[in-house]
Image (cartoon, rainbow, N blue to C red):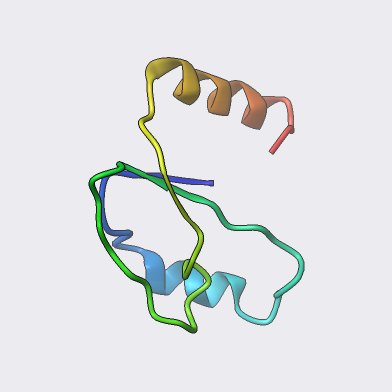
Length: 71
């Protein structure tokens, strides 16, 4: 899960990380509802954006789920 306010500056690095492992991951990008960006068709991020407003409770849940291995 990627939580972002705008563009993903390390997107090229993530593209390399995921390359060759299609089918073994799911990508979800939670961005602000007013962020309007289209990823290239061949990007792992294409069509994976979910407009979301993130609050403190969401971030806290992410921290807890990572620490206990729920991700």
